Amino acid sequence: AGDEAFVDALPKVELHVHLEGSMLPGTVLALARRHQVEDIPTTETALADWYAFKDFDHFLRVYRTAVQVLRDEDDFALLARETALGLAAQNVRYAEMYFTPFIHTRRGIPIDEVFAGINRGRLEAQEATGVEIRWITDIPGGLPGVDILAVADLTVQFAVEHGGDSVIGLGVGGAEVGVPRPQFARAFGAAREAGLRSLPHAGETTGPRTIWDSIDELGADRIGHGIRCLDDPALVARLRADRIPLDVSPTSNLRTGVVADYPSHPLPTLIAEGLAVSINSDDPPMFGTTLRDEYLHALRDLGLSRAAVAELAAAAVRHSFLPEYRKNVLL
Ligand code: ADE
Ligand code: ZN
Image (tube, rainbow, N blue to C red; front, side, top):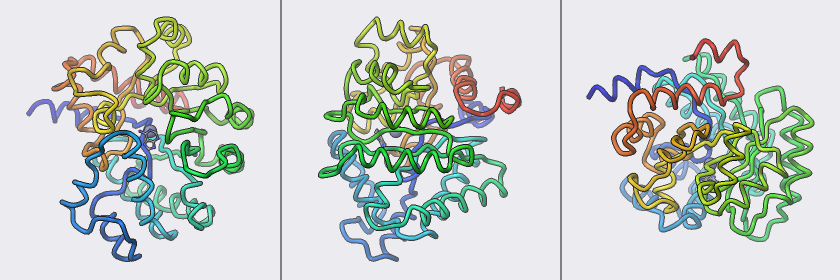
């Protein structure tokens, strides 16, 4: 009982959450009905069953099907507003949120419509609650039949055009298997030159090589997941020495099958190794979680003390790209 009050009282920031993975069940059903989208479950129970992922690739296939309910500017505004309001209700004050322009443009939705929608929703929620959202544009790895370097160029071009505005970084996500990071060196170089942060997913479904490449070739400012660093002591030493933070999402790892259960989740080991880590929700409704739940799992299922959990919340503030004077208010 006291755990909930403790978690609710922590001012939180979320560093790793995907806009498209944040659609509430009722919103998925309503949008699917409105736009008559096929292949989408029509009840909340069926939707929950649909979200029982066999493995990471299965998760990605469901994800790519689910996003098809997003069709017009109003859908994107609704999603961004609901997601931001949901964060505010958990005492989350600020979030760095991935969105993936190409999974919408490839369905024929103009990027300007997507961006106008998500910024409208973002600002409406900010006006209502004070919660602030900044965007990270994500390159989607592993799409069948797609020239990923062309997608990378489009994504970085968009990010650079809007950098300094509401866009703060460039990411790469989706599949890691078969999507080596060095090929994105030019895209991330251009982004960094424009003042954007480098925020690749790495070491979620593949091993240390992807993390090394993300550091050495992409200049990673943080690593999405990164849990497989533990396979390589030299990599752990490098992450610790350079203080490169990992955005860890325990429930995501369980639900995509990359970790078997909470007791075997490596978060406590990552902390014991002296690494910079925070906890995050990734795709909360799809994984049956929220950021608040991740903090509760850390206390109840990962065996962390309240002091350790408070430190995770403070670490997320420090790892964020808020200006220093804004961080100080939250610490
Ligand atoms: N896109 C949405 N969720 C993701 C995850 N957990 N890993 C990689 N890409 C993603
Ligand atoms: Zn992610």
